[in-house]
Amino acid sequence: MTTTEIGHKSLLGHLRTMFLRGIGVIIPVGLTYWFFRALLNWVDGILSPVLEQWIGFPIPGLGFVTMIVLILLVGLLTRNLVGRLFFAWVENLLRTIPFVRSVYSAIKDLVGAFVTGGKSRTFREVVMTEYPRKGLYCIGFVTNEMSYATDDGSLVDFLNVYIPNPPNPTSGFLVLIPKAEAIHLDLTIEEGLKLVLSGGIVLPEKLLLRRRREIP
Image: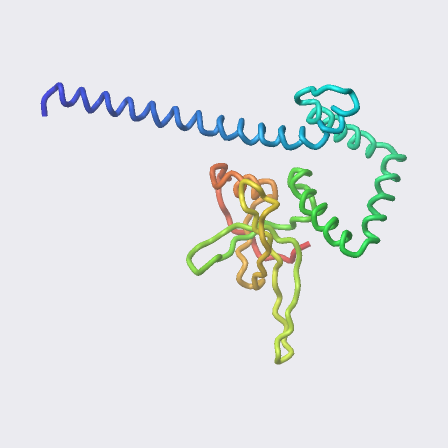
């Protein structure tokens, strides 16, 4: 191989490396921009038509800003007694409506698990299980326990495990895992969420098993 050929391959190698690095920077930035632009347009489209009719002319982004202010205002109201009593009344009202009660409770518990930074009691423990088949493992979050009575009268204990689908964790699904088959991981809920929602990019220093114990 001549010096020219070596230099040519070396140049192509450098160009390939730079190209891949450029992709590694541009794609995450581009997808993040696309996601937040779609989110802004969606939120802006909720309130903008109402506000435009009220003020008489369109202002781009006004609906989004109004939504942010509204969220902050609700958060501020929940910090004082009057606000807490009001929202508790609204919540109790929703819980009295049969179908709405089930949907509202499920959504509130699920959203609370992510909004509170992994400190919610909705998710109790991080486990690993063989799913969807033997030899493949996935990570999920224990939400509760239940027992199944077999035909002979014996009870089989199951863990209710929620497995989120990144990047949208609220689109996950529920699986029932026999308690004896669950692999308990020595991870906090926050560490487990980071691991799953990052697609395995954000890793703990060690993935250790936790000694078997009762779920609180």
